[in-house]
Image 1 (tube, helix red, strand yellow):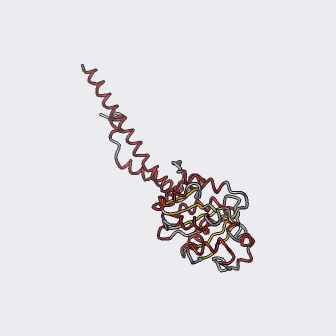
Image 2 (cartoon, one colour):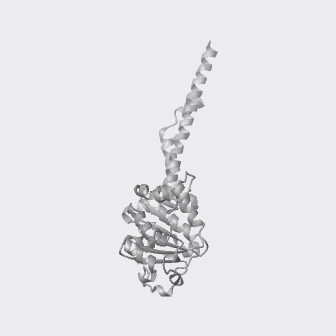
Image 3 (cartoon, helix red, strand yellow):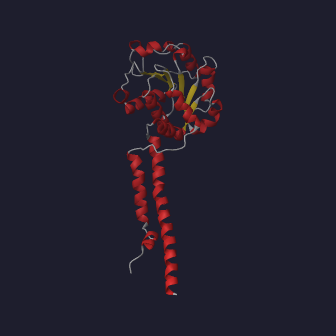
Length: 284
């Protein structure tokens, strides 16, 4: 005797569930979708601060981060640069640590600002090399940017670029974006950029550093991205899905088949139970 539809629903092979789950997870891995998710107030502040900058503003990016913590920084930094390149602003980036300029160059090769956003190097963005000195380097750049470098990351003379002529001191920059692997980073940034020059700071950092930084939100630090979660939120909010959204989407889509099979199995169970009662009543 053939099985009823309810019995079939109750006995769907587990292999079908595994295959469907795998296929659902494969979709965002191949092409991130940027599925909706809850956006934190700090990420909203980060995004809103940048999109509301006046046209022609120069954004100072202290591109540190670390290759050893790339999983925490990649989504945030990719989404941030893509968002900046989509806006009518200019970017000056430098490296507070040795990894910084290398990471920035990697990102530029991946983003391709000229091809994908119509930006011109030297006019719309500039990448300086590693500038040693920690907090003293920040103080020197804020006081006299031209005093810390004569060549860019690629060894070219900075005087040939029109953007370099606009980057004089703290007054030249509309906002500071600081990327760091230190949980004391915002204390240092506030001392140099805000206390002396009144510049507000956006931060990109590891997730574990958020408790130390969020105390400056929103008056001094209008927004921040911490860990892969912050980067994923910015990807979704800005419309530039990337590695963060890929993981988030895969996680969300991967569980969908389990929920579907759970519903089907319950329908099968309840339907079989109802059908059995009907047979018993007919038999009587």
